[in-house]
Image (tube, rainbow, N blue to C red; front, side, top):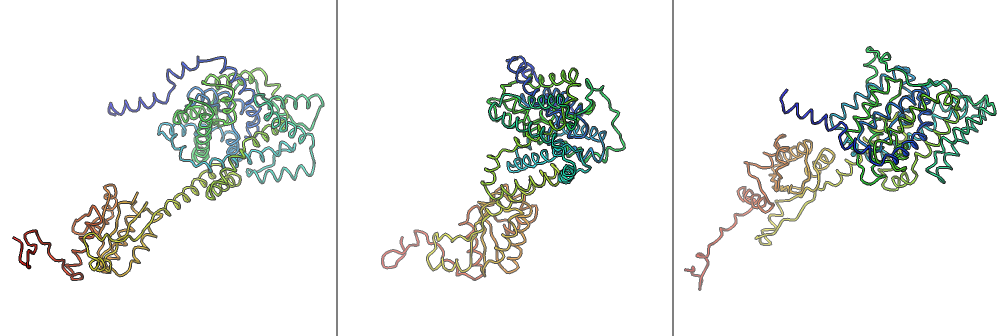
Length: 579
Protein backbone atom coordinates (compact mmCIF):
# COMPACT_ATOMS: atom_id res chain seq x y z
CA UNK A 1 0.00 0.00 0.00
CA UNK A 2 1.43 3.35 -1.03
CA UNK A 3 2.29 6.07 1.45
CA UNK A 4 -0.37 8.36 -0.01
CA UNK A 5 -3.09 5.75 0.53
CA UNK A 6 -1.96 5.13 4.11
CA UNK A 7 -2.03 8.86 4.81
CA UNK A 8 -5.49 9.20 3.30
CA UNK A 9 -6.86 6.33 5.39
CA UNK A 10 -5.21 7.68 8.53
CA UNK A 11 -6.59 11.19 7.97
CA UNK A 12 -10.05 9.73 7.38
CA UNK A 13 -9.93 7.77 10.65
CA UNK A 14 -8.66 10.80 12.57
CA UNK A 15 -11.45 12.95 11.12
CA UNK A 16 -14.06 10.55 12.52
CA UNK A 17 -12.62 10.33 16.04
CA UNK A 18 -13.18 12.78 18.90
CA UNK A 19 -10.87 15.78 18.68
CA UNK A 20 -9.33 18.26 21.07
CA UNK A 21 -12.14 20.81 20.69
CA UNK A 22 -14.70 18.11 21.58
CA UNK A 23 -12.90 17.32 24.82
CA UNK A 24 -12.39 21.00 25.62
CA UNK A 25 -16.12 21.62 25.14
CA UNK A 26 -16.88 19.18 27.97
CA UNK A 27 -15.43 21.68 30.41
CA UNK A 28 -17.57 24.54 29.12
CA UNK A 29 -20.51 25.43 31.37
CA UNK A 30 -20.54 22.07 33.23
CA UNK A 31 -23.36 22.95 35.66
CA UNK A 32 -25.72 23.73 32.83
CA UNK A 33 -24.96 20.46 31.02
CA UNK A 34 -25.08 18.34 34.20
CA UNK A 35 -28.58 19.65 34.97
CA UNK A 36 -29.68 19.05 31.38
CA UNK A 37 -28.34 15.49 31.50
CA UNK A 38 -30.15 14.81 34.78
CA UNK A 39 -33.41 16.07 33.30
CA UNK A 40 -33.01 13.92 30.20
CA UNK A 41 -32.24 10.86 32.34
CA UNK A 42 -35.47 11.34 34.30
CA UNK A 43 -37.42 11.58 31.03
CA UNK A 44 -35.54 8.65 29.48
CA UNK A 45 -36.01 6.18 32.35
CA UNK A 46 -39.65 5.21 31.69
CA UNK A 47 -39.04 5.27 27.94
CA UNK A 48 -36.04 2.94 28.22
CA UNK A 49 -38.06 0.56 30.39
CA UNK A 50 -41.07 0.71 28.11
CA UNK A 51 -39.19 0.19 24.87
CA UNK A 52 -37.21 -2.67 26.42
CA UNK A 53 -40.42 -4.42 27.41
CA UNK A 54 -42.05 -3.70 24.03
CA UNK A 55 -39.08 -5.13 22.14
CA UNK A 56 -39.56 -8.49 23.86
CA UNK A 57 -36.17 -8.56 25.63
CA UNK A 58 -37.35 -7.03 28.89
CA UNK A 59 -36.87 -3.82 30.84
CA UNK A 60 -33.23 -4.67 31.63
CA UNK A 61 -32.41 -4.68 27.91
CA UNK A 62 -33.80 -1.17 27.55
CA UNK A 63 -31.78 0.11 30.51
CA UNK A 64 -28.58 -1.56 29.29
CA UNK A 65 -29.05 0.04 25.90
CA UNK A 66 -29.65 3.49 27.35
CA UNK A 67 -26.51 3.27 29.49
CA UNK A 68 -24.01 1.63 27.12
CA UNK A 69 -25.19 2.99 23.78
CA UNK A 70 -25.99 6.38 25.28
CA UNK A 71 -22.44 6.80 26.60
CA UNK A 72 -20.58 5.57 23.50
CA UNK A 73 -22.75 7.53 21.05
CA UNK A 74 -22.21 10.65 23.14
CA UNK A 75 -18.42 10.26 22.99
CA UNK A 76 -17.97 9.19 19.36
CA UNK A 77 -21.08 10.67 17.71
CA UNK A 78 -21.19 13.71 15.49
CA UNK A 79 -23.61 15.85 17.51
CA UNK A 80 -23.04 17.70 20.77
CA UNK A 81 -26.71 17.37 21.67
CA UNK A 82 -27.72 13.90 20.50
CA UNK A 83 -29.08 11.51 23.14
CA UNK A 84 -29.16 7.87 22.07
CA UNK A 85 -30.90 4.78 23.38
CA UNK A 86 -33.80 2.43 22.64
CA UNK A 87 -36.53 4.07 20.58
CA UNK A 88 -40.03 3.31 19.47
CA UNK A 89 -39.07 3.18 15.82
CA UNK A 90 -36.42 0.55 16.51
CA UNK A 91 -38.85 -1.41 18.66
CA UNK A 92 -41.21 -1.62 15.70
CA UNK A 93 -38.47 -3.33 13.68
CA UNK A 94 -37.29 -5.58 16.53
CA UNK A 95 -40.64 -7.16 17.42
CA UNK A 96 -40.85 -9.37 14.29
CA UNK A 97 -37.14 -10.21 14.60
CA UNK A 98 -37.68 -11.41 18.18
CA UNK A 99 -40.65 -13.48 17.04
CA UNK A 100 -38.66 -15.16 14.29
CA UNK A 101 -35.12 -15.46 15.67
CA UNK A 102 -35.52 -15.04 19.42
CA UNK A 103 -33.59 -12.76 21.80
CA UNK A 104 -30.17 -14.05 20.70
CA UNK A 105 -31.06 -13.25 17.12
CA UNK A 106 -31.81 -9.65 18.09
CA UNK A 107 -28.45 -9.29 19.82
CA UNK A 108 -26.65 -10.66 16.76
CA UNK A 109 -28.62 -8.37 14.47
CA UNK A 110 -27.64 -5.38 16.62
CA UNK A 111 -23.96 -6.30 16.43
CA UNK A 112 -24.08 -6.74 12.64
CA UNK A 113 -25.97 -3.47 12.25
CA UNK A 114 -23.29 -1.69 14.26
CA UNK A 115 -20.59 -3.00 11.93
CA UNK A 116 -22.61 -1.86 8.91
CA UNK A 117 -22.98 1.63 10.40
CA UNK A 118 -19.22 1.90 10.89
CA UNK A 119 -18.74 0.92 7.24
CA UNK A 120 -21.28 3.57 6.17
CA UNK A 121 -19.37 6.16 8.20
CA UNK A 122 -16.12 5.19 6.47
CA UNK A 123 -17.86 5.51 3.08
CA UNK A 124 -19.16 9.00 4.00
CA UNK A 125 -22.77 7.92 3.55
CA UNK A 126 -24.07 10.32 6.18
CA UNK A 127 -24.57 13.09 3.65
CA UNK A 128 -27.25 11.04 1.87
CA UNK A 129 -29.76 12.07 4.54
CA UNK A 130 -30.18 15.44 2.86
CA UNK A 131 -31.82 13.71 -0.11
CA UNK A 132 -34.71 12.22 1.89
CA UNK A 133 -37.81 14.31 1.03
CA UNK A 134 -39.73 15.92 3.87
CA UNK A 135 -43.04 14.09 3.06
CA UNK A 136 -41.21 10.76 3.46
CA UNK A 137 -39.90 11.82 6.87
CA UNK A 138 -43.31 13.08 7.99
CA UNK A 139 -45.10 9.96 6.74
CA UNK A 140 -42.45 7.79 8.36
CA UNK A 141 -42.91 9.58 11.69
CA UNK A 142 -46.71 9.36 11.50
CA UNK A 143 -46.54 5.65 10.73
CA UNK A 144 -44.12 5.01 13.60
CA UNK A 145 -46.40 6.88 16.01
CA UNK A 146 -49.35 4.72 14.94
CA UNK A 147 -47.37 1.51 15.30
CA UNK A 148 -46.01 2.47 18.73
CA UNK A 149 -49.52 3.33 19.91
CA UNK A 150 -50.96 0.05 18.65
CA UNK A 151 -48.11 -1.93 20.23
CA UNK A 152 -49.19 -0.64 23.65
CA UNK A 153 -52.78 -1.86 23.34
CA UNK A 154 -52.16 -5.27 25.01
CA UNK A 155 -50.34 -3.66 27.95
CA UNK A 156 -52.92 -0.89 28.29
CA UNK A 157 -55.76 -3.43 28.25
CA UNK A 158 -53.99 -5.67 30.76
CA UNK A 159 -53.92 -8.79 28.56
CA UNK A 160 -50.92 -10.95 27.65
CA UNK A 161 -49.40 -10.02 24.35
CA UNK A 162 -51.01 -12.24 21.67
CA UNK A 163 -48.84 -14.20 19.26
CA UNK A 164 -47.95 -12.60 15.92
CA UNK A 165 -45.59 -10.06 14.42
CA UNK A 166 -48.13 -7.90 12.55
CA UNK A 167 -49.16 -5.06 14.80
CA UNK A 168 -52.70 -4.79 13.40
CA UNK A 169 -53.31 -8.52 13.94
CA UNK A 170 -51.86 -8.46 17.45
CA UNK A 171 -53.96 -5.42 18.37
CA UNK A 172 -57.16 -7.04 17.13
CA UNK A 173 -56.44 -10.22 19.11
CA UNK A 174 -55.72 -8.18 22.23
CA UNK A 175 -59.03 -6.32 21.88
CA UNK A 176 -60.88 -9.64 21.53
CA UNK A 177 -59.21 -11.03 24.66
CA UNK A 178 -60.08 -7.87 26.58
CA UNK A 179 -63.69 -8.07 25.47
CA UNK A 180 -63.87 -11.60 26.82
CA UNK A 181 -62.33 -10.66 30.20
CA UNK A 182 -62.10 -6.87 30.75
CA UNK A 183 -59.29 -5.51 32.96
CA UNK A 184 -60.42 -2.01 33.80
CA UNK A 185 -57.64 -1.50 36.34
CA UNK A 186 -54.97 -1.67 33.64
CA UNK A 187 -57.01 0.59 31.37
CA UNK A 188 -57.42 3.15 34.14
CA UNK A 189 -53.69 3.22 34.94
CA UNK A 190 -52.69 3.56 31.27
CA UNK A 191 -55.20 6.31 30.56
CA UNK A 192 -54.31 8.20 33.73
CA UNK A 193 -50.56 8.14 33.01
CA UNK A 194 -51.08 9.24 29.40
CA UNK A 195 -53.48 12.01 30.44
CA UNK A 196 -51.08 13.36 33.10
CA UNK A 197 -48.23 13.41 30.61
CA UNK A 198 -50.19 15.13 27.85
CA UNK A 199 -51.86 17.69 30.09
CA UNK A 200 -48.71 18.40 32.05
CA UNK A 201 -46.57 18.87 28.95
CA UNK A 202 -48.83 21.70 27.81
CA UNK A 203 -48.72 23.59 31.08
CA UNK A 204 -45.22 22.86 32.41
CA UNK A 205 -43.05 21.47 29.60
CA UNK A 206 -39.91 21.47 31.79
CA UNK A 207 -41.42 19.12 34.40
CA UNK A 208 -40.80 15.35 33.76
CA UNK A 209 -44.45 14.33 34.12
CA UNK A 210 -43.70 10.87 32.75
CA UNK A 211 -41.68 10.04 35.89
CA UNK A 212 -44.28 11.69 38.14
CA UNK A 213 -47.09 9.69 36.55
CA UNK A 214 -45.20 6.38 36.66
CA UNK A 215 -44.26 6.84 40.31
CA UNK A 216 -47.85 7.71 41.20
CA UNK A 217 -49.21 4.70 39.30
CA UNK A 218 -46.70 2.40 41.02
CA UNK A 219 -47.57 3.73 44.46
CA UNK A 220 -51.30 3.36 43.81
CA UNK A 221 -50.83 -0.19 42.54
CA UNK A 222 -48.78 -1.17 45.61
CA UNK A 223 -50.91 0.58 48.24
CA UNK A 224 -54.24 -0.52 46.82
CA UNK A 225 -52.94 -4.06 46.10
CA UNK A 226 -54.19 -3.92 42.52
CA UNK A 227 -53.58 -7.50 41.45
CA UNK A 228 -54.70 -6.70 37.91
CA UNK A 229 -51.80 -4.23 37.55
CA UNK A 230 -49.10 -6.60 36.33
CA UNK A 231 -45.62 -5.29 37.28
CA UNK A 232 -42.54 -5.31 35.05
CA UNK A 233 -41.00 -8.16 37.01
CA UNK A 234 -37.41 -8.97 37.85
CA UNK A 235 -34.81 -6.36 36.85
CA UNK A 236 -31.20 -7.40 37.65
CA UNK A 237 -29.06 -5.01 39.69
CA UNK A 238 -26.21 -3.94 37.41
CA UNK A 239 -25.19 -4.74 33.87
CA UNK A 240 -24.19 -8.27 32.86
CA UNK A 241 -20.57 -9.00 32.05
CA UNK A 242 -19.66 -8.49 28.37
CA UNK A 243 -20.25 -11.68 26.40
CA UNK A 244 -20.29 -12.96 22.83
CA UNK A 245 -22.09 -16.17 23.75
CA UNK A 246 -25.13 -15.15 21.73
CA UNK A 247 -23.22 -15.29 18.45
CA UNK A 248 -24.01 -18.22 16.17
CA UNK A 249 -21.79 -18.11 13.04
CA UNK A 250 -24.13 -20.47 11.25
CA UNK A 251 -27.02 -18.01 11.43
CA UNK A 252 -25.15 -14.90 10.28
CA UNK A 253 -26.28 -15.30 6.68
CA UNK A 254 -29.98 -15.40 7.54
CA UNK A 255 -29.61 -12.44 9.92
CA UNK A 256 -27.89 -10.18 7.40
CA UNK A 257 -31.13 -8.86 5.87
CA UNK A 258 -32.63 -7.87 9.27
CA UNK A 259 -29.28 -6.31 10.18
CA UNK A 260 -29.39 -4.16 7.04
CA UNK A 261 -32.91 -3.05 7.99
CA UNK A 262 -31.82 -2.17 11.54
CA UNK A 263 -28.74 -0.30 10.28
CA UNK A 264 -30.80 1.66 7.76
CA UNK A 265 -33.31 2.65 10.41
CA UNK A 266 -30.59 3.57 12.91
CA UNK A 267 -28.89 5.78 10.34
CA UNK A 268 -32.12 7.44 9.24
CA UNK A 269 -33.51 8.13 12.70
CA UNK A 270 -30.18 9.22 14.18
CA UNK A 271 -29.38 11.67 11.39
CA UNK A 272 -32.92 13.00 11.47
CA UNK A 273 -32.69 13.50 15.23
CA UNK A 274 -29.33 15.29 14.91
CA UNK A 275 -30.80 17.59 12.24
CA UNK A 276 -33.72 18.42 14.52
CA UNK A 277 -31.27 19.28 17.32
CA UNK A 278 -29.35 21.62 14.99
CA UNK A 279 -32.56 23.40 14.12
CA UNK A 280 -33.45 23.94 17.79
CA UNK A 281 -30.17 25.68 18.65
CA UNK A 282 -27.87 28.39 17.38
CA UNK A 283 -24.32 27.56 16.35
CA UNK A 284 -24.65 23.76 16.54
CA UNK A 285 -24.03 21.63 13.44
CA UNK A 286 -23.58 17.88 13.50
CA UNK A 287 -21.16 15.79 11.43
CA UNK A 288 -23.30 13.08 9.77
CA UNK A 289 -20.44 10.66 9.16
CA UNK A 290 -19.19 10.91 12.74
CA UNK A 291 -22.74 10.39 13.91
CA UNK A 292 -22.91 7.12 11.95
CA UNK A 293 -19.61 6.04 13.52
CA UNK A 294 -20.91 6.80 17.02
CA UNK A 295 -24.13 4.89 16.43
CA UNK A 296 -22.16 2.01 14.92
CA UNK A 297 -19.86 1.68 17.93
CA UNK A 298 -22.85 2.01 20.27
CA UNK A 299 -24.67 -0.82 18.52
CA UNK A 300 -21.59 -3.03 18.51
CA UNK A 301 -21.20 -2.59 22.28
CA UNK A 302 -24.85 -2.66 23.45
CA UNK A 303 -25.52 -6.34 22.52
CA UNK A 304 -22.43 -7.39 24.49
CA UNK A 305 -24.28 -6.22 27.63
CA UNK A 306 -27.66 -7.62 26.60
CA UNK A 307 -28.94 -4.40 25.04
CA UNK A 308 -31.12 -3.93 21.98
CA UNK A 309 -30.11 -1.87 18.91
CA UNK A 310 -30.11 1.88 19.59
CA UNK A 311 -30.55 5.08 17.62
CA UNK A 312 -30.53 8.78 18.26
CA UNK A 313 -33.79 9.54 20.10
CA UNK A 314 -35.66 12.58 18.82
CA UNK A 315 -37.75 13.10 21.98
CA UNK A 316 -34.80 12.86 24.40
CA UNK A 317 -32.56 14.92 22.14
CA UNK A 318 -35.22 17.62 21.97
CA UNK A 319 -35.48 17.68 25.77
CA UNK A 320 -31.69 17.94 25.96
CA UNK A 321 -31.64 20.93 23.62
CA UNK A 322 -34.57 22.66 25.31
CA UNK A 323 -33.00 22.39 28.76
CA UNK A 324 -29.91 24.28 27.65
CA UNK A 325 -27.33 21.58 26.85
CA UNK A 326 -24.44 22.72 24.66
CA UNK A 327 -21.90 19.90 24.96
CA UNK A 328 -21.63 16.11 25.06
CA UNK A 329 -21.42 16.24 28.85
CA UNK A 330 -25.22 16.32 29.05
CA UNK A 331 -25.66 13.05 27.11
CA UNK A 332 -22.88 11.43 29.14
CA UNK A 333 -24.58 12.55 32.36
CA UNK A 334 -27.85 11.02 31.13
CA UNK A 335 -26.13 7.67 30.64
CA UNK A 336 -24.36 7.87 34.00
CA UNK A 337 -27.56 8.65 35.94
CA UNK A 338 -29.35 5.72 34.32
CA UNK A 339 -26.36 3.54 35.19
CA UNK A 340 -26.68 4.53 38.84
CA UNK A 341 -30.39 3.66 38.73
CA UNK A 342 -29.58 0.24 37.26
CA UNK A 343 -27.18 -0.53 40.13
CA UNK A 344 -29.17 0.98 43.00
CA UNK A 345 -32.90 0.99 42.22
CA UNK A 346 -33.57 -2.20 40.24
CA UNK A 347 -36.00 -3.64 42.86
CA UNK A 348 -38.11 -0.49 42.74
CA UNK A 349 -38.10 -0.42 38.94
CA UNK A 350 -39.36 -4.03 38.92
CA UNK A 351 -42.59 -2.93 40.67
CA UNK A 352 -43.68 -0.48 37.94
CA UNK A 353 -46.97 -1.68 36.37
CA UNK A 354 -46.78 -2.61 32.69
CA UNK A 355 -49.96 -0.61 32.12
CA UNK A 356 -48.20 2.53 33.38
CA UNK A 357 -45.38 2.06 30.87
CA UNK A 358 -48.00 1.48 28.16
CA UNK A 359 -49.52 4.84 29.10
CA UNK A 360 -46.10 6.52 28.82
CA UNK A 361 -45.58 5.16 25.33
CA UNK A 362 -49.13 6.00 24.25
CA UNK A 363 -48.54 9.62 25.25
CA UNK A 364 -45.17 9.54 23.50
CA UNK A 365 -46.80 8.28 20.30
CA UNK A 366 -49.41 11.03 20.42
CA UNK A 367 -46.76 13.71 20.97
CA UNK A 368 -44.75 12.44 18.01
CA UNK A 369 -47.48 13.57 15.62
CA UNK A 370 -46.95 17.18 14.57
CA UNK A 371 -50.38 18.16 13.27
CA UNK A 372 -49.12 21.47 11.86
CA UNK A 373 -46.38 19.78 9.81
CA UNK A 374 -48.79 17.15 8.50
CA UNK A 375 -51.32 19.80 7.51
CA UNK A 376 -48.62 21.80 5.71
CA UNK A 377 -47.45 18.75 3.75
CA UNK A 378 -50.96 17.77 2.74
CA UNK A 379 -51.74 21.30 1.56
CA UNK A 380 -48.45 21.75 -0.31
CA UNK A 381 -49.06 19.58 -3.40
CA UNK A 382 -50.95 16.44 -4.25
CA UNK A 383 -47.65 14.65 -4.76
CA UNK A 384 -46.48 15.52 -1.25
CA UNK A 385 -49.78 14.36 0.23
CA UNK A 386 -49.60 11.08 -1.71
CA UNK A 387 -46.02 10.40 -0.61
CA UNK A 388 -46.87 11.11 3.03
CA UNK A 389 -49.94 8.84 3.05
CA UNK A 390 -48.19 5.98 1.23
CA UNK A 391 -45.17 6.10 3.55
CA UNK A 392 -47.36 6.13 6.65
CA UNK A 393 -49.55 3.28 5.35
CA UNK A 394 -46.50 1.20 4.38
CA UNK A 395 -45.02 1.76 7.85
CA UNK A 396 -48.20 0.48 9.42
CA UNK A 397 -48.80 -2.46 7.06
CA UNK A 398 -45.25 -3.57 6.22
CA UNK A 399 -42.16 -2.36 8.09
CA UNK A 400 -40.15 0.81 8.42
CA UNK A 401 -37.41 0.07 5.91
CA UNK A 402 -39.86 -0.96 3.20
CA UNK A 403 -41.87 2.16 4.02
CA UNK A 404 -38.89 4.43 3.46
CA UNK A 405 -37.98 2.61 0.25
CA UNK A 406 -41.53 2.92 -1.04
CA UNK A 407 -41.66 6.59 -0.06
CA UNK A 408 -38.36 7.33 -1.78
CA UNK A 409 -39.38 5.37 -4.89
CA UNK A 410 -42.71 7.19 -5.22
CA UNK A 411 -41.09 10.56 -4.52
CA UNK A 412 -38.40 9.85 -7.13
CA UNK A 413 -40.95 8.76 -9.72
CA UNK A 414 -43.09 11.86 -9.18
CA UNK A 415 -40.04 14.10 -9.29
CA UNK A 416 -38.87 12.53 -12.54
CA UNK A 417 -42.33 13.01 -14.00
CA UNK A 418 -42.28 16.68 -13.03
CA UNK A 419 -38.81 17.16 -14.53
CA UNK A 420 -39.79 15.30 -17.70
CA UNK A 421 -42.78 17.59 -18.18
CA UNK A 422 -40.41 20.55 -18.21
CA UNK A 423 -38.81 19.30 -21.43
CA UNK A 424 -40.18 21.22 -24.43
CA UNK A 425 -39.89 20.61 -28.13
CA UNK A 426 -41.10 23.67 -30.07
CA UNK A 427 -40.88 24.75 -33.67
CA UNK A 428 -39.26 28.17 -33.95
CA UNK A 429 -39.51 30.63 -36.85
CA UNK A 430 -36.52 30.92 -39.13
CA UNK A 431 -34.58 34.15 -38.92
CA UNK A 432 -35.17 36.13 -42.12
CA UNK A 433 -31.66 37.52 -41.94
CA UNK A 434 -30.50 38.73 -45.37
CA UNK A 435 -33.21 36.84 -47.23
CA UNK A 436 -35.99 38.52 -49.15
CA UNK A 437 -39.61 37.64 -48.45
CA UNK A 438 -39.67 35.30 -51.49
CA UNK A 439 -36.48 33.55 -50.38
CA UNK A 440 -37.79 33.20 -46.82
CA UNK A 441 -41.00 31.61 -48.12
CA UNK A 442 -38.94 29.09 -50.11
CA UNK A 443 -36.79 28.31 -47.06
CA UNK A 444 -39.88 27.86 -44.89
CA UNK A 445 -41.27 25.33 -47.35
CA UNK A 446 -38.24 23.08 -47.03
CA UNK A 447 -36.47 23.85 -43.71
CA UNK A 448 -37.91 23.62 -40.20
CA UNK A 449 -36.12 24.47 -36.95
CA UNK A 450 -36.96 23.07 -33.51
CA UNK A 451 -35.70 24.23 -30.14
CA UNK A 452 -35.24 21.63 -27.39
CA UNK A 453 -35.61 23.08 -23.88
CA UNK A 454 -34.85 21.29 -20.63
CA UNK A 455 -33.63 17.75 -19.95
CA UNK A 456 -33.53 15.07 -22.63
CA UNK A 457 -33.37 11.91 -20.56
CA UNK A 458 -35.15 8.59 -20.25
CA UNK A 459 -38.32 10.00 -18.68
CA UNK A 460 -38.93 12.48 -21.51
CA UNK A 461 -37.08 10.98 -24.46
CA UNK A 462 -39.82 8.85 -26.01
CA UNK A 463 -42.28 11.74 -26.18
CA UNK A 464 -39.56 13.67 -27.96
CA UNK A 465 -39.06 10.82 -30.47
CA UNK A 466 -42.78 10.73 -31.25
CA UNK A 467 -42.95 14.47 -31.89
CA UNK A 468 -39.78 14.62 -33.96
CA UNK A 469 -40.62 11.73 -36.27
CA UNK A 470 -44.02 13.30 -37.02
CA UNK A 471 -42.37 16.35 -38.59
CA UNK A 472 -44.11 17.46 -41.79
CA UNK A 473 -42.69 16.77 -45.26
CA UNK A 474 -39.60 18.96 -45.26
CA UNK A 475 -36.07 18.49 -46.58
CA UNK A 476 -33.99 19.77 -43.64
CA UNK A 477 -34.62 19.71 -39.88
CA UNK A 478 -32.47 21.92 -37.65
CA UNK A 479 -32.28 21.03 -33.95
CA UNK A 480 -31.32 23.90 -31.69
CA UNK A 481 -29.68 22.16 -28.72
CA UNK A 482 -28.13 25.06 -26.83
CA UNK A 483 -30.92 24.94 -24.23
CA UNK A 484 -30.72 21.22 -23.49
CA UNK A 485 -29.91 21.16 -19.77
CA UNK A 486 -28.91 17.50 -19.60
CA UNK A 487 -28.91 14.40 -21.76
CA UNK A 488 -28.41 10.78 -20.79
CA UNK A 489 -27.73 7.61 -22.79
CA UNK A 490 -31.45 6.94 -23.28
CA UNK A 491 -32.06 10.43 -24.58
CA UNK A 492 -29.07 10.16 -26.93
CA UNK A 493 -30.27 6.77 -28.26
CA UNK A 494 -33.78 8.09 -28.83
CA UNK A 495 -32.34 11.12 -30.63
CA UNK A 496 -30.21 8.84 -32.80
CA UNK A 497 -33.26 6.70 -33.64
CA UNK A 498 -35.29 9.77 -34.62
CA UNK A 499 -32.49 11.12 -36.84
CA UNK A 500 -32.10 7.75 -38.59
CA UNK A 501 -35.84 7.59 -39.29
CA UNK A 502 -35.79 11.10 -40.76
CA UNK A 503 -32.74 10.28 -42.90
CA UNK A 504 -34.52 7.23 -44.31
CA UNK A 505 -37.22 9.65 -45.47
CA UNK A 506 -34.57 11.75 -47.17
CA UNK A 507 -34.59 14.47 -44.51
CA UNK A 508 -31.24 15.99 -43.54
CA UNK A 509 -30.88 16.71 -39.81
CA UNK A 510 -28.46 19.39 -38.61
CA UNK A 511 -27.78 20.44 -35.04
CA UNK A 512 -26.64 23.76 -33.64
CA UNK A 513 -25.30 24.74 -30.25
CA UNK A 514 -24.20 21.30 -29.05
CA UNK A 515 -22.53 21.83 -25.68
CA UNK A 516 -19.18 20.23 -24.83
CA UNK A 517 -20.76 18.25 -22.00
CA UNK A 518 -23.24 16.67 -24.42
CA UNK A 519 -20.67 15.53 -26.96
CA UNK A 520 -19.43 12.50 -25.04
CA UNK A 521 -22.93 11.07 -24.50
CA UNK A 522 -23.94 11.65 -28.13
CA UNK A 523 -20.67 10.26 -29.44
CA UNK A 524 -20.85 7.13 -27.25
CA UNK A 525 -24.08 5.97 -28.91
CA UNK A 526 -23.18 7.12 -32.44
CA UNK A 527 -25.59 10.05 -32.55
CA UNK A 528 -22.93 12.76 -32.92
CA UNK A 529 -21.92 11.64 -36.42
CA UNK A 530 -25.55 11.72 -37.55
CA UNK A 531 -26.09 15.22 -36.18
CA UNK A 532 -22.82 16.50 -37.67
CA UNK A 533 -22.65 15.06 -41.23
CA UNK A 534 -19.16 15.14 -42.72
CA UNK A 535 -17.89 16.25 -39.30
CA UNK A 536 -19.39 19.74 -39.56
CA UNK A 537 -20.74 21.35 -36.42
CA UNK A 538 -22.61 24.62 -36.19
CA UNK A 539 -22.24 26.91 -33.22
CA UNK A 540 -25.34 28.94 -34.04
CA UNK A 541 -28.64 28.48 -35.81
CA UNK A 542 -27.90 31.00 -38.62
CA UNK A 543 -24.83 28.94 -39.54
CA UNK A 544 -26.97 25.79 -39.67
CA UNK A 545 -29.58 27.59 -41.85
CA UNK A 546 -26.88 28.64 -44.33
CA UNK A 547 -25.63 25.05 -44.47
CA UNK A 548 -29.21 23.84 -45.00
CA UNK A 549 -29.68 26.29 -47.89
CA UNK A 550 -26.41 25.20 -49.48
CA UNK A 551 -27.63 21.61 -49.28
CA UNK A 552 -30.97 22.46 -50.91
CA UNK A 553 -29.26 24.47 -53.64
CA UNK A 554 -26.92 21.58 -54.38
CA UNK A 555 -29.90 19.25 -54.53
CA UNK A 556 -31.68 21.62 -56.94
CA UNK A 557 -34.55 22.23 -54.57
CA UNK A 558 -33.76 25.94 -54.24
CA UNK A 559 -32.41 28.17 -57.01
CA UNK A 560 -28.78 29.10 -56.63
CA UNK A 561 -28.36 32.42 -54.89
CA UNK A 562 -26.84 35.17 -57.09
CA UNK A 563 -23.16 35.72 -56.43
CA UNK A 564 -22.47 38.65 -54.15
CA UNK A 565 -21.11 41.59 -56.10
CA UNK A 566 -18.20 43.64 -54.91
CA UNK A 567 -18.11 47.45 -54.90
CA UNK A 568 -16.12 47.43 -58.16
CA UNK A 569 -18.98 45.54 -59.84
CA UNK A 570 -21.75 47.91 -58.76
CA UNK A 571 -23.39 49.59 -61.78
CA UNK A 572 -22.45 53.20 -62.42
CA UNK A 573 -24.24 55.91 -64.39
CA UNK A 574 -26.32 54.70 -67.35
CA UNK A 575 -25.75 51.13 -66.32
CA UNK A 576 -22.04 51.17 -66.92
CA UNK A 577 -19.87 49.38 -64.42
CA UNK A 578 -18.44 51.59 -61.74
CA UNK A 579 -14.77 52.18 -62.07
